[in-house]
Length: 497
Image (cartoon, rainbow, N blue to C red; front, side, top):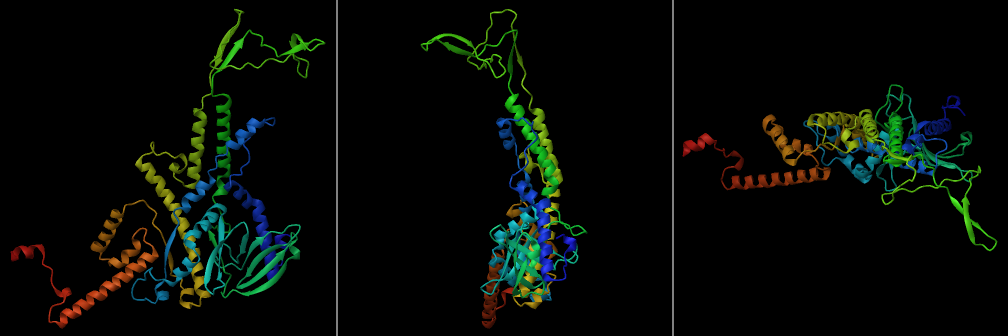
């Protein structure tokens, strides 16, 4: 049934529509993207009568850059914490802090420190990926990733809406012996789906209410255009990847067959393959040329190496050599394609070429700046999706304030290469010159984890309690508070002297 003919007014109709959309996307581009990610590329062009040696070189010519180009920006995306909005955190008079945020318990419980990377990789490669947030058997909320090869979602406005109308995740595709299975969410209601290749025979069985007010599936996409289409980076670089493979194949052909000098002889008849002639008693009585299928004598293949010397008795015979094929042009072509891949994906050329000796500091900085802008774009897109995930988890946990918190934000780890001394110097100047409270700068310490921030806060509170007790004892004994003792300036100390 065509997608435009499906009645989407019922849950069953929406489930059929989602399966048709997923099947179409798989056939049109998702399976192709997956093949390139796995290194399963079409062979480079070669002659129709190519022998096994050519085919072996074609397999060796596959230089798969796709996974590297997908992983590079993802390595800059790592959620390190979550900062709730002020009203949700119950702090309306000053900035909220990352420490002790209940939303982070859900993150750690779902083991998303490690699992978040797979969600980003799929979104960057295929254009989108998904998560589902639900209540586990222990009554607590969990979030896990869903593959775009098995998941699809529909929206009223796919370009603007963050809440899908419905979503489906296929857990098993149908075969001749057994039907396929899928989980289907129609808004907050979950169904179990049984289906065959004929989607008109699809069967639904209601599982129950998920506990949320909306579909618990969240889409992660690096780019969504105004028509609601998502775009990954793999499809746009497939032509360049094919060109890279073809250039590598041509290089291997030239290297295998033409990268050495060829010795030539003119004016000399090649020796022929001789076969023995036997008498009636089986004794060799002579030799005669061996004939090929066309009845012509077979020439003997001459093996020439450094230990052999060619000579001829006929003075008309001439020896010579053919120069080897230069490989510099092929190597330059490989470098050119790599640079084009770098430009198309905003990836620094050092990532692909593996060398920085010929690049100036300014060129490296410009490349990294462009790359960091792309990473920042991905972080903004993924951050919005994570904020919805946190709101979903709060709604499932019955925390209304956090479920309506649209001011919360995820905290991304700073992946720039700087020394701890540089960070400490910069933060110290912010505190000293701008008067920013030191505790407010703690979350900006690069590499600090949420658990460390919590511990710092506990230690600071313990220190304040000890100081207050010491001051109380001092006042009770008639002494002066340590906080009221003026500190002499340098000039005051000199006057006293």
